[in-house]
Image (tube, rainbow, N blue to C red; front, side, top):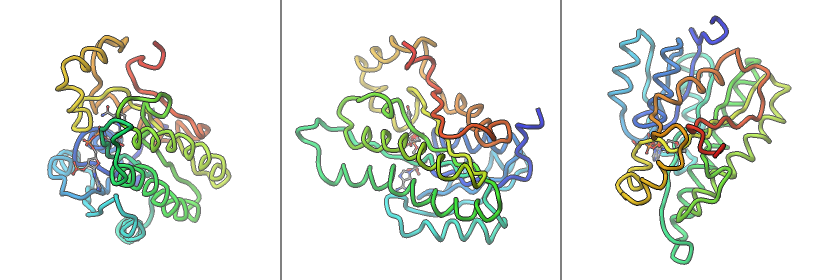
Length: 250
Ligand code: NAP
């Protein structure tokens, strides 16, 4: 199992306070990594869990709807730990409204965070990864990287874009020994999907389509994240790994 071992690795995980980002940060730490949790509110639960494993955890305060803090985060990681082995671009937002009513601010905020910050943080980390001779970038995509969805037009645009730039970055960065891949979670019970879960009709429709017969949990993402962060995936480039209980296969 040594090829999955992340001991001594430094990972930045954006949005590690709750949900999928918390699950992934905890999973990477279980495999041995030290974690910088980047987000706009402290992450005491994540910190307590990771410290309890004997791994280091640092919180870095950043608003990822904007791009002006990105270089500061990367500089902090290098100053604190000397390198960045793994970046998980997890932080993401969603806005729900019909196409005919969708506002420009709901378009701009989602695209700015889910797509623009994801790219510019990846670019800044990739510069460090290139100089150190290795790196792993894991983007969090979505079922809406493949499908249209309903009432979430800027989110679908952003996640379809994430799938595209994952492949583009993988193409350009493979020669630097940087692997860029994505995880496409299915329907996972988190704050992001709370509105769907509380809508009884939509919730039942969604559940009825999941072959696994249950919603996913943030813990379900740990294995895919550890794989894509580890040596086990050194020849995997530009792949979008669905962790969806079979949703796309249906
Ligand atoms: P979540 O619990 O709402 O997580 C979103 C994370 O992003 C939180 O940690 C949040 O921090 C952080 N965040 C929000 N606004 C931010 C900002 N301005 N600056 C920095 N960080 C910010 O929902 P989630 O479901 O785990 O979502 C995580 C990722 O998975 C997202 O990219 C989402 O699109 C994707 N995803 C989710 C599902 C699903 O079914 N849940 C499916 C496919 C993809 P706070 O909690 O402090 O606000």
